[in-house]
Image (tube, rainbow, N blue to C red; front, side, top):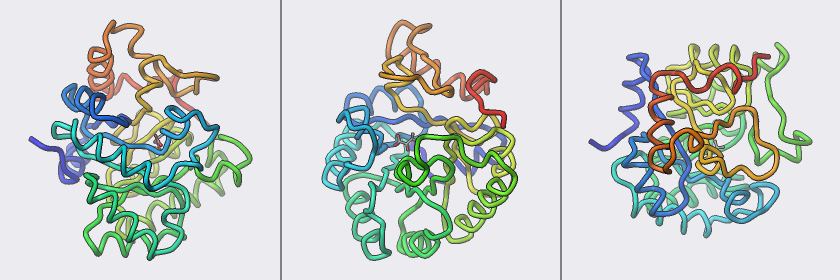
Length: 264
Ligand code: KIV
Protein backbone atom coordinates (compact mmCIF):
# COMPACT_ATOMS: atom_id res chain seq x y z
CA UNK A 1 0.00 0.00 0.00
CA UNK A 2 1.26 3.48 -0.84
CA UNK A 3 2.76 5.50 2.01
CA UNK A 4 0.96 8.76 2.78
CA UNK A 5 1.27 11.47 5.39
CA UNK A 6 -1.29 9.48 7.41
CA UNK A 7 1.10 6.50 7.49
CA UNK A 8 3.78 8.67 9.08
CA UNK A 9 1.32 10.12 11.63
CA UNK A 10 0.12 6.65 12.44
CA UNK A 11 3.67 5.39 12.99
CA UNK A 12 4.37 8.27 15.36
CA UNK A 13 1.24 7.52 17.36
CA UNK A 14 2.19 3.86 17.65
CA UNK A 15 5.82 4.64 18.50
CA UNK A 16 7.00 3.01 15.28
CA UNK A 17 9.76 4.54 13.18
CA UNK A 18 9.96 5.20 9.44
CA UNK A 19 12.86 5.41 7.01
CA UNK A 20 13.74 8.14 4.54
CA UNK A 21 16.47 8.04 1.91
CA UNK A 22 17.46 10.38 -0.91
CA UNK A 23 17.15 9.36 -4.56
CA UNK A 24 17.64 11.47 -7.63
CA UNK A 25 16.80 9.12 -10.52
CA UNK A 26 14.31 6.43 -11.54
CA UNK A 27 16.58 3.41 -11.00
CA UNK A 28 17.52 4.34 -7.46
CA UNK A 29 13.94 5.34 -6.70
CA UNK A 30 12.71 1.89 -7.72
CA UNK A 31 15.37 0.04 -5.71
CA UNK A 32 14.88 2.27 -2.66
CA UNK A 33 11.11 1.99 -2.82
CA UNK A 34 11.11 -1.79 -3.34
CA UNK A 35 13.54 -2.16 -0.42
CA UNK A 36 10.84 -0.74 1.86
CA UNK A 37 11.98 2.85 2.38
CA UNK A 38 8.91 4.85 3.40
CA UNK A 39 9.87 8.29 2.08
CA UNK A 40 12.09 9.19 -0.88
CA UNK A 41 13.67 12.62 -0.57
CA UNK A 42 14.84 14.38 -3.71
CA UNK A 43 17.25 16.53 -1.74
CA UNK A 44 19.04 19.57 -3.04
CA UNK A 45 22.06 17.63 -1.77
CA UNK A 46 22.12 16.60 -5.43
CA UNK A 47 24.01 19.85 -6.00
CA UNK A 48 26.87 18.35 -4.00
CA UNK A 49 26.67 14.59 -4.65
CA UNK A 50 25.67 14.70 -8.35
CA UNK A 51 26.93 18.07 -9.53
CA UNK A 52 30.09 18.44 -7.44
CA UNK A 53 29.34 21.87 -5.96
CA UNK A 54 30.58 22.67 -2.47
CA UNK A 55 27.07 23.71 -1.34
CA UNK A 56 23.43 23.21 -2.32
CA UNK A 57 22.97 26.85 -3.36
CA UNK A 58 23.49 26.50 -7.14
CA UNK A 59 20.61 23.99 -7.53
CA UNK A 60 17.78 25.41 -9.68
CA UNK A 61 14.05 24.74 -9.89
CA UNK A 62 14.45 23.27 -13.41
CA UNK A 63 16.97 20.77 -12.08
CA UNK A 64 14.70 19.82 -9.17
CA UNK A 65 11.76 19.32 -11.53
CA UNK A 66 13.90 17.07 -13.75
CA UNK A 67 14.99 14.88 -10.82
CA UNK A 68 11.53 14.77 -9.19
CA UNK A 69 9.91 13.58 -12.42
CA UNK A 70 12.64 10.93 -12.85
CA UNK A 71 12.13 9.67 -9.29
CA UNK A 72 8.34 9.64 -9.71
CA UNK A 73 8.70 7.23 -12.64
CA UNK A 74 10.75 4.73 -10.61
CA UNK A 75 8.81 5.05 -7.37
CA UNK A 76 6.78 2.02 -6.23
CA UNK A 77 4.64 3.44 -3.44
CA UNK A 78 6.96 5.51 -1.25
CA UNK A 79 5.99 9.06 -0.31
CA UNK A 80 7.94 11.52 -2.48
CA UNK A 81 9.33 14.59 -0.72
CA UNK A 82 11.04 17.26 -2.82
CA UNK A 83 13.37 19.99 -1.64
CA UNK A 84 12.55 23.54 -2.64
CA UNK A 85 15.92 24.91 -3.75
CA UNK A 86 17.66 28.03 -2.45
CA UNK A 87 15.54 31.21 -2.83
CA UNK A 88 12.67 29.37 -4.57
CA UNK A 89 10.46 30.23 -1.53
CA UNK A 90 11.84 33.70 -0.77
CA UNK A 91 8.31 35.10 -1.01
CA UNK A 92 4.92 33.45 -0.49
CA UNK A 93 4.08 33.95 -4.18
CA UNK A 94 7.32 32.32 -5.34
CA UNK A 95 6.78 29.42 -2.92
CA UNK A 96 3.25 28.77 -4.23
CA UNK A 97 4.34 28.82 -7.85
CA UNK A 98 7.44 26.69 -7.35
CA UNK A 99 5.79 24.18 -5.01
CA UNK A 100 3.01 23.72 -7.58
CA UNK A 101 5.63 22.87 -10.18
CA UNK A 102 7.24 20.26 -7.92
CA UNK A 103 3.84 18.74 -7.08
CA UNK A 104 2.90 18.59 -10.79
CA UNK A 105 6.20 16.78 -11.41
CA UNK A 106 5.31 14.03 -8.94
CA UNK A 107 6.14 15.26 -5.44
CA UNK A 108 3.70 14.48 -2.61
CA UNK A 109 5.30 16.95 -0.18
CA UNK A 110 7.83 19.79 -0.33
CA UNK A 111 10.62 20.59 2.12
CA UNK A 112 11.69 24.12 3.11
CA UNK A 113 14.67 25.15 5.23
CA UNK A 114 14.26 27.88 7.81
CA UNK A 115 12.68 29.09 11.03
CA UNK A 116 9.72 31.22 12.11
CA UNK A 117 9.94 33.51 9.07
CA UNK A 118 8.42 30.62 7.04
CA UNK A 119 5.10 30.63 8.97
CA UNK A 120 3.08 32.56 6.36
CA UNK A 121 4.57 30.53 3.51
CA UNK A 122 3.83 27.21 5.20
CA UNK A 123 0.31 28.35 6.03
CA UNK A 124 -0.32 29.41 2.42
CA UNK A 125 1.04 26.14 1.01
CA UNK A 126 -0.84 24.01 3.50
CA UNK A 127 -4.14 25.84 2.91
CA UNK A 128 -3.78 25.18 -0.81
CA UNK A 129 -3.15 21.44 -0.48
CA UNK A 130 0.63 21.21 -0.40
CA UNK A 131 2.00 19.12 2.48
CA UNK A 132 5.15 20.69 3.96
CA UNK A 133 8.21 19.43 5.79
CA UNK A 134 10.04 22.18 7.71
CA UNK A 135 13.81 21.58 7.97
CA UNK A 136 15.44 23.02 11.11
CA UNK A 137 18.85 22.81 12.78
CA UNK A 138 21.75 22.69 10.33
CA UNK A 139 19.98 24.00 7.24
CA UNK A 140 22.58 23.72 4.44
CA UNK A 141 21.09 26.61 2.42
CA UNK A 142 22.22 28.84 5.32
CA UNK A 143 25.85 27.65 5.26
CA UNK A 144 27.09 31.18 4.58
CA UNK A 145 25.17 32.58 7.57
CA UNK A 146 26.37 29.74 9.83
CA UNK A 147 29.97 30.10 8.62
CA UNK A 148 30.22 26.36 7.93
CA UNK A 149 28.41 23.07 8.47
CA UNK A 150 28.06 23.02 12.27
CA UNK A 151 25.89 21.27 14.85
CA UNK A 152 23.06 23.65 15.88
CA UNK A 153 21.19 24.15 19.17
CA UNK A 154 24.09 23.27 21.45
CA UNK A 155 23.35 25.87 24.13
CA UNK A 156 20.07 26.15 26.04
CA UNK A 157 19.09 29.51 24.51
CA UNK A 158 19.33 28.17 20.94
CA UNK A 159 17.77 24.86 21.95
CA UNK A 160 14.72 26.66 23.41
CA UNK A 161 14.45 28.76 20.28
CA UNK A 162 14.50 25.67 18.05
CA UNK A 163 11.73 24.04 20.10
CA UNK A 164 9.70 27.25 19.82
CA UNK A 165 10.23 27.42 16.04
CA UNK A 166 9.27 23.77 15.55
CA UNK A 167 6.03 24.31 17.49
CA UNK A 168 5.23 27.51 15.57
CA UNK A 169 5.85 25.90 12.18
CA UNK A 170 3.63 22.92 13.04
CA UNK A 171 0.94 25.35 14.23
CA UNK A 172 1.29 27.17 10.88
CA UNK A 173 0.61 23.92 9.02
CA UNK A 174 3.89 21.99 8.70
CA UNK A 175 3.06 18.27 8.46
CA UNK A 176 6.58 17.03 9.18
CA UNK A 177 9.69 18.47 10.88
CA UNK A 178 13.21 17.49 9.83
CA UNK A 179 16.10 18.09 12.23
CA UNK A 180 19.68 18.04 10.92
CA UNK A 181 22.75 17.92 13.15
CA UNK A 182 21.27 18.74 16.53
CA UNK A 183 22.16 17.16 19.88
CA UNK A 184 20.12 14.02 20.51
CA UNK A 185 18.50 15.28 23.75
CA UNK A 186 17.20 18.39 21.92
CA UNK A 187 15.84 16.27 19.04
CA UNK A 188 14.05 14.08 21.60
CA UNK A 189 12.49 17.18 23.23
CA UNK A 190 11.25 18.48 19.87
CA UNK A 191 9.88 15.05 18.92
CA UNK A 192 7.91 15.04 22.18
CA UNK A 193 6.78 18.65 21.82
CA UNK A 194 5.14 18.43 18.38
CA UNK A 195 2.35 16.18 17.14
CA UNK A 196 3.83 16.09 13.63
CA UNK A 197 6.27 13.29 12.75
CA UNK A 198 9.93 14.33 13.18
CA UNK A 199 12.72 13.05 10.92
CA UNK A 200 16.34 13.21 12.06
CA UNK A 201 19.78 13.17 10.45
CA UNK A 202 22.56 13.47 12.97
CA UNK A 203 19.82 13.96 15.58
CA UNK A 204 19.97 10.72 17.56
CA UNK A 205 17.71 7.68 17.79
CA UNK A 206 14.66 9.28 19.40
CA UNK A 207 13.14 11.02 16.37
CA UNK A 208 10.19 9.35 14.62
CA UNK A 209 12.07 8.79 11.37
CA UNK A 210 15.63 8.78 10.05
CA UNK A 211 17.07 10.09 6.80
CA UNK A 212 20.42 9.65 5.05
CA UNK A 213 21.84 10.64 1.68
CA UNK A 214 21.92 7.42 -0.38
CA UNK A 215 25.52 7.98 -1.56
CA UNK A 216 26.66 8.22 2.08
CA UNK A 217 24.96 5.01 3.23
CA UNK A 218 26.47 3.18 0.25
CA UNK A 219 29.98 4.21 1.35
CA UNK A 220 30.37 6.74 -1.46
CA UNK A 221 31.10 9.78 0.73
CA UNK A 222 33.86 11.86 -0.82
CA UNK A 223 35.82 14.05 1.58
CA UNK A 224 35.25 13.97 5.33
CA UNK A 225 32.63 11.46 6.45
CA UNK A 226 30.09 13.09 8.80
CA UNK A 227 29.70 11.49 12.22
CA UNK A 228 26.07 10.49 11.53
CA UNK A 229 26.87 8.45 8.40
CA UNK A 230 26.97 4.66 8.42
CA UNK A 231 28.20 2.65 5.43
CA UNK A 232 25.56 -0.11 5.11
CA UNK A 233 27.07 -1.52 1.90
CA UNK A 234 30.22 -2.63 3.75
CA UNK A 235 28.28 -5.32 5.62
CA UNK A 236 25.64 -6.12 2.98
CA UNK A 237 27.39 -6.85 -0.30
CA UNK A 238 24.71 -5.40 -2.60
CA UNK A 239 22.99 -2.06 -3.02
CA UNK A 240 19.55 -3.58 -2.41
CA UNK A 241 20.88 -5.48 0.63
CA UNK A 242 22.41 -2.30 2.04
CA UNK A 243 19.16 -0.37 1.69
CA UNK A 244 17.17 -3.24 3.25
CA UNK A 245 19.68 -3.30 6.13
CA UNK A 246 19.17 0.45 6.61
CA UNK A 247 15.38 0.03 6.66
CA UNK A 248 15.67 -2.78 9.23
CA UNK A 249 18.16 -0.84 11.40
CA UNK A 250 15.89 2.22 11.45
CA UNK A 251 12.87 0.04 12.24
CA UNK A 252 14.53 -1.64 15.24
CA UNK A 253 16.31 1.59 16.28
CA UNK A 254 19.81 0.08 16.06
CA UNK A 255 20.65 2.97 13.73
CA UNK A 256 21.70 5.59 14.64
CA UNK A 257 23.82 4.30 17.53
CA UNK A 258 25.91 6.36 19.97
CA UNK A 259 28.80 6.61 17.52
CA UNK A 260 26.53 8.39 14.98
CA UNK A 261 25.05 10.79 17.52
CA UNK A 262 25.87 14.29 18.82
CA UNK A 263 25.15 14.18 22.56
CA UNK A 264 25.56 17.88 23.24
O1 KIV B 1 19.22 17.71 0.62
C1 KIV B 1 19.16 16.71 1.34
O2 KIV B 1 19.51 15.59 0.95
C2 KIV B 1 18.68 16.88 2.71
C3 KIV B 1 18.97 15.80 3.70
C4 KIV B 1 20.40 15.83 4.08
C5 KIV B 1 18.09 15.86 4.87
O3 KIV B 1 18.09 17.87 3.01
